[in-house]
Amino acid sequence: MDGFGGFLNDKINAGLAEVRSQGFNSDLKKLYIQIDPSTLTVYWTAVVGPSLDGRCYMSVDSRGSAGGGLPAVQKQCPRMHRLHSNLVPVKLLEFNDNVLQCYNWEGEKLDTVTRAINIQQHFYKYYDPQIGNGTTLAEVVQKEKDAEMTSLMVVSKPTAPAVHYRRYTVKSGDTLSQIAQKHNTTVSRIAKANNLRSYVIRVGQNLKIPN
Image (cartoon, rainbow, N blue to C red; front, top):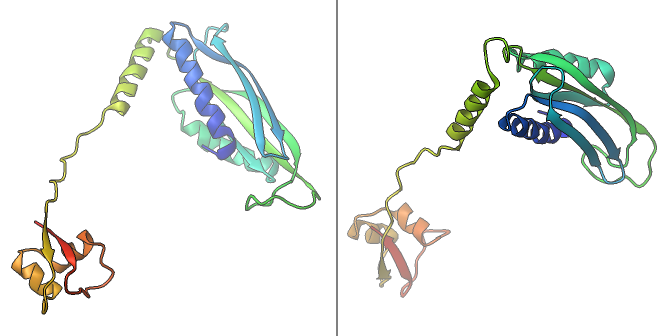
């Protein structure tokens, strides 16, 4: 999903799922969008509720372009429809606005505004033709709940064994290699345990020796 429509789509799809959970065919009835170029803020309002045309609209998706025009958007839509291959697309909104360019492409605010950028975003809603024709809404809602539960399941991973340390005070003539060998560990483990930037140690230095 793209940066402009992606957030809207996620929120709208959550609203559609909530309508279905109440036992109604879901639908996105209206979508209003406005862009404030001075703050790069997108204001939007979506109206979701029970469907009145007998269809159950399962999801909303969109594709768009900043400066690429209609051909750039149309090129993306077939790929988007393939992501919803079991659903039927219905165009909901063709957002098309010439927005003053107040920022450069790195997100830095411009000192002067010299041109406008054409922003287009096509929104589609997708309905499931199987609902009411062999598949019930209740079955679909149950599948959604099962999928949500699966995504929330956390696969437990073995916990790494706790590392215990002994303390050792460096004596005259000691080297990290000797200390590591004496305590059946490695130089690298001692260095990591003590955040040593080099293998140089000094007499009287207290070291943590990992088991």
